[in-house]
Image (tube, rainbow, N blue to C red; front, top):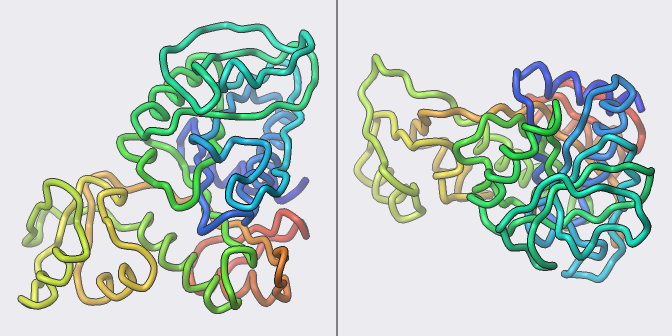
Length: 297
């Protein structure tokens, strides 16, 4: 898939060996986007390691009981998943054990020997996910992670490339979907601190109450957090705060692009109009992995 190859190139251009796919809601195409990048990597003979954050790796969406896209994996691929969900047939070999818990038992690392469909069930915590990603890097050249809905804590302390997914399934209108992805993409793209300008450090999370207080006192200094995951604001609250405050971070993230899914169970958007609107709102390249099209602002 050409879009998968383009998105792979964009992620690799960040210099990172891991890519985390996060989304604005359920069923917005995170797994499909990851699968397209995985297929493109396989075509380039790039050894991949795959993982998922917590319950998002289940075969069925817990919130709505809809079937999730399954991953058909090629020999040589390494997975971090729960031991109990490995295929029953001799399709893989266990290469390492872990004490990390998952919703389906202890996490293990296995290498695919024969092609098969796999489920990815990973650690539910950010620290556990970071441990799994680091372990996979010792077995594979590129690590791909199916992230949870707006769960960005696992990005803390890493040097991952980030792909943001949005779609019709998670919003009532196209404008709502555009606003949601604009807020998430901008939050993850908060710029690095300028050490030459006045600043105030926030040692932990920057909350809604802290933002309100800073706005009320007319704060003009840079408000600096460790990384964008420490900004505990989302949606319109973040957009409003970011317009009034100079939010910065010590460790910027690397957002490689946005993927769009214009069709949801209850509604659909005109695909190209949706992609153009998302590109204009985020100033990032937008990839429609279903239509195999790339849009830039």
